[in-house]
Length: 186
Image (tube, rainbow, N blue to C red):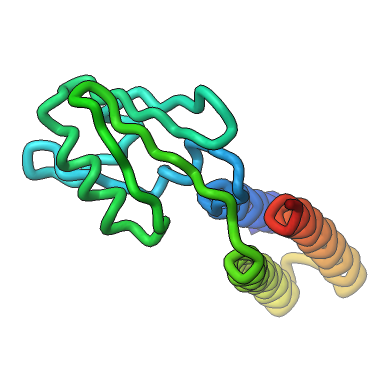
């Protein structure tokens, strides 16, 4: 493997860490209605666990309500059950055609719990970025051992991998700070 390929693979791996972090953070409630909090909720659709966005239209008519309009109204009870069994702590109501999901304001304690979980998610993604760095460094050391590159080339490539890692962790920290601010904002 060439130095270029190793660096490209490291960049792709770190980009995946950022993308996954953004998805994970999108699923965390901030006190405002967001259809993103339903991304991990799956309802039984004729016996198959199906994400809500694949079986209904999701919208936020105001900042404190999510409206779920299923394409097949016979699935309303399955949607309600899926929301109740999720760890969102929300109570859905329905009128036979749509499911309304009122988003209550977050308590101070719940805000702190969510901020703590954001920190844990962030740490998992920092570790993943460092793991990508470690794999790239190992590939570079193997290339040096196999005499595919000189020591100077290896040194330059290790520095580039470290720079990529620093940029990735900086981006992770920025996303976490933004999400924590959203959560703690009243």
